[in-house]
Image (cartoon, rainbow, N blue to C red; front, side, top):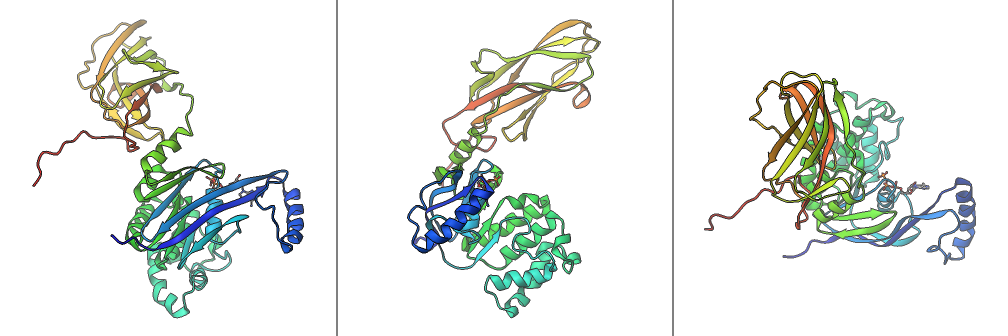
Length: 402
Ligand SMILES: Nc1ncnc2c1ncn2[C@@H]1O[C@H](COP(=O)(O)OP(=O)(O)OP(=O)(O)O)[C@@H](O)[C@H]1O
């Protein structure tokens, strides 16, 4: 198959910033003079300077989407701003072919005192479209943004979501060859985000896209390759998106301690454990597909009937990924001021690789009249060779070939 053309080429891209404004201004003045004579020290750091972006290299073809991930301050937005020509790099080279549509900072690229409609014309002109061409697209853009009612209002009075709607509508509907999107998409409501994904799916085959996000589901949804940045540098680069996401998650290992989020003081969880499972630093290690026995010791202070126990499993992003409801529980009589041991079998945990927390909930009946709720009653790590980041890996086998 013939490879599509390279639309973005980035070679040895670096950008340094200064931590102190006064020093930065002084360096700026000095650089003005040295640059005239050819500054050979651009690759060296001076006092109080640091590399916000250091030696980044990649090539992006039409139809490919590069995801940029990393901690706050890793250098992702700075890299996007260099790509979009908003700031100059200190070293390296960017080569871009074709029209660039960009949605970088909220409201960036808009003139706040002009109306939404006027801004559409301004942005279109910057992208190289004639007035006639913009005329033919403006209705489509307004329809897409779903803010027709406010399109003649100054952009400075728009809500964050409205700015993103207009920004994405302009960037995407202008048929860019290269589309650069920063985290801002997250500001849109769910309806708009879903619409953006649909548009991205439609335009991606003809576009090279660079996408920054802290949402790993979004990254895995649209990116064909990923750069994981750490303090300006590439920590991982490649097409194994699952591996990149796994590495990203491992940057944020936290101390897992349980916390009671609700109690009416009628009962208390004394202890929770996974029986016969190795536990290191409070984290139980199991393998994908294992069945485990969960033991809870509950101190009953005042209940006369056995509470209904259920569990919820949360992933690293604190998304609830599963509910565990032991159905065969009977509200039998219990005696106040005694301890009760409970054993539950959790069958075939098909959770994929990663760290999960289990919340315990005790209530009168399932999810009604809660007595006690504790987060991170158990923390477990599922080990597995495959680099899979989605919450489940479902067992499957091929039954028939034609
Ligand atoms: N104009 C500037 N002057 C000085 N330092 C800057 C400037 N712009 C960015 N920085 C610094 O560069 C580093 C990288 O910032 P950048 O905004 O690129 O990070 P990021 O990865 O996009 O972070 P986030 O996930 O928080 O959006 C940060 O330490 C930031 O403080």
